[in-house]
Image 1 (tube, helix red, strand yellow):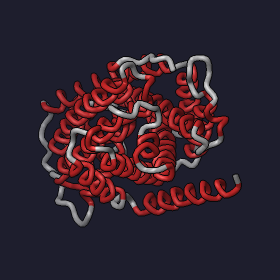
Image 2: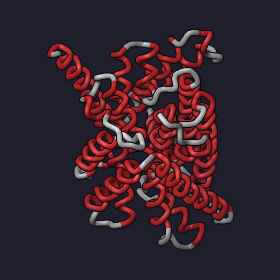
Image 3: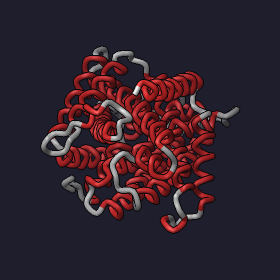
Image 4: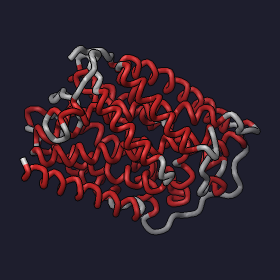
Length: 399
């Protein structure tokens, strides 16, 4: 396959994936759950993300094949584990794509969310089908605009008056659930790994791009968390537009925030669809999905997989359910990274410089957060993954 992406391209694809709709909505529900422990929830999510990113980097330095943990699971565990990882990735990210498209639509065209969300998915899929270089270019533009806006917002908030209604202390497992929501917002960091050898010198560039993009986003989230807690306090609890609320106290108006929320959502959606289509195409090449999904255009883009995934995302977006799709996404992606850590643990010591203790720690933290997601997302996620494994078993018996 022709290598087309540079390390810088890969970094921006990761940034676009992480700084999408999640950053514009996560602080409200997370503050409701974590209260005054909001910063701790961010740090906990970042620790899990860092452990997972380090594991992905460790695996990607040896296995350059596209597909991310699907490829790693097949290489170091078994075809069954690889399929479960691939299914978890596709299920989680299709849910993410539908939710992100709905966030984009709710900011841009309130009252016409489903139509606008569907159009957004179609346009981003077409851009990806035209070629991965256009995906990288679009990610650079969209991520650059989003980062600039968030930095300006943080600086402006530093000069805003402090709140006189602080966040209250959390109760129960609220901090863990909040961390799982922040992980949903962080979870695009390893999207680069799904591109595999489409990145130049992928064995070196992919691991570096993952760590660099995660580090940049962690600083941004931590900064936003601090100003949200200290400038809005209890006023942010449960808000569906927390950054608009922050802009209102920082600039005196929030009328422009919808533009940047829309741009960020498009960047995240663009990277999401690219990662999913390549994972689906790789699974199809292995016979784990219908082989037709492996069909590629002249520029190497798996256009049929891209189209099929976009169609499913549109169907999910038509449901209009944010809570269920985000809960489903968080659970499935945490399962995906749990399998990555298991694959990292099974990787021969001569291929890995890290201690296996970190793989075990990452695996346990992924499972803790996975079973801390909202109950409806947990139940649906388990049901869908079990169904996927049953269907795979049943189809294998028919061959």
